[in-house]
Length: 300
Ligand code: SF4
Image (cartoon, rainbow, N blue to C red; front, side, top):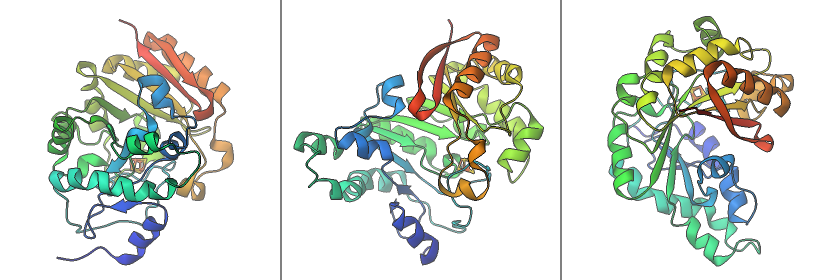
């Protein structure tokens, strides 16, 4: 069995990725908000919008592989793992607490981290399958989500929507599908998919009306911040419970592909989200200017 090339793996380890197995790209990495919340600081907008406690949330992916190369993606496209071994859902479940502990152990001596909070962080309640890579490329995704649910975790699944047949079998607490463009042409230009998955994406979006779900729009100035009516029509047709309009952040490897001017400020995000809401028949439910995100909710 071939092990992963050490180069990319090492580079990602330096960035804080914790791998579930040396032969697999399944990985976990606490996000910035998890660490902030652990120190008693601010939590992520998901706490404000949905009640998720950031220091009890595990951010992981069952694979780092992806079938798109979105211009705004924070990940590097050099770190690919062809031929990797897939971890089983049981291996991932068994690794979660140990890897989260390893990733957070440096915070224990901090005067800002109370013993209670640290103990809570080592006993996570939420799993966000959203780190990097496309989770529907992992062949046991529905089984992984079912296993996590049975163990009492609430799960958030974030997908690019290219595999509706997999999404249809997944039952997370909340399902996210990214909508990065109002039309096929813009989608192909921004997401640079391996194949034209626009129709697959539309099919995935149509699955959202029957479950607790959210459409994620990453708004990139000058690239996809146009035609709010078309976004609105797609959202309305999907019947998704929520739509999050979030400004692109000039971070990670996306800085090699985009410019700082592609980051919209919160005023722009709010205005665009407001136009979508008006045309789609959604209402503005909440907003977080620090994260430049506006949450819309279906009126019903
Ligand atoms: S679909 Fe997600 S992981 Fe894949 S390139 Fe786009 S932003 Fe990155």
